[in-house]
Length: 334
Image (tube, rainbow, N blue to C red; front, side, top):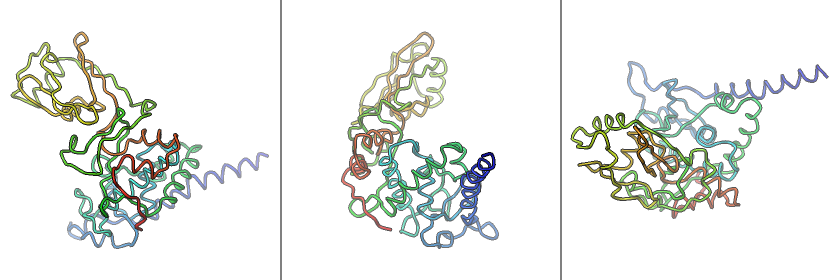
């Protein structure tokens, strides 16, 4: 029995540690610069058919990774692996569509920050992405096999599928948690996109990020406001008395508000005070101002927790994608 136990442990070690490590090392690294510090042409980096030229920020280099393997790394990084299979499939199609739109091989323009790369792994600029080794650290040895198998199935079953609008790949924006509705693109980014329309998104309350309460000292608030807007005229002791919401978005979030003598965007307030969303209210509590926020993220495109709620209620990944991205078609192009 003891010998059988050792054999089982050794087998698990091979499957979970050794094999993923070999797969990750098999990705051929391509330096972002050529001899003499000259930037390599995009065609040199993306010349391998069916591969994504990914700039990895931690390594400061570009690696060529097979498309579907890249998508698996994005899904693992961007969506909880515990989610329903149909929600994970929807995330896989969104991740593939994102890189397909920027993929040099498909006529895309590549990553604007890193010449020669199709995309980077910085989620604030492109999409997050993690290796199998990082998945192991994230999930632990006992959950790794189950979660990776689940993502592998979701990606493989949607292989080659992307979202198109009028025959062109879309920008498949997504975020964590809505307040019950998503946003029109122009209300957040200033640019109208016909497929990024405000839609209902019920069932979000189960998200751990659905509700946030944050208290900030009045002195800190006033200092940050004055640093951001030096011409601001406001009562330093009771600044909130001169705050007023002037316009709300289609999704019910703060779009425009007045602060004393100036008018600002809700997105600016969210960024300044590091709030979870622009669906916020405020009230005075002693020497602080308490913000209550509903939802987490910019609110445009697919809500991940909303997608999971739809999947739990029987929706397929196609249903989910067509709900959050108005007028799109899901087509296998690869």
